[in-house]
Length: 105
Image (tube, rainbow, N blue to C red; front, side, top):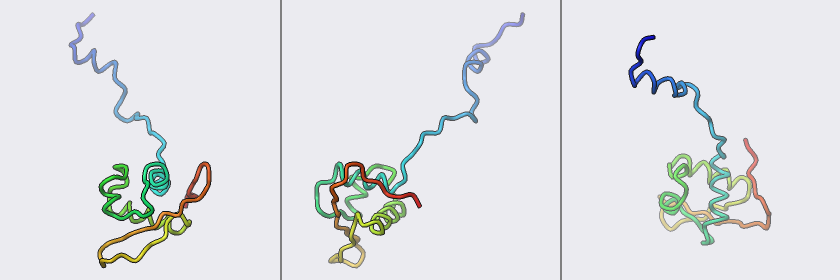
């Protein structure tokens, strides 16, 4: 029997690199809605708030805007006129629903 090196013994115990366990993830609008209703207490939210306080997966500009626009379409947010042309502000429409969801598109 041939002696194995420590690297060969360690390699035997590992899973192949291809087999990774994929975690189910929420869509970005659903994640934003959950965060707004559970953690955000202000009546409005703006892009600066999303960049600073939202979950990391929403802090990207494109994801944040598309998620907010999806929530506008479903009635959870209403876009307000901002005092600056480069600022986006939304009013949060809180509804008395136990488990709010955003339909997947």
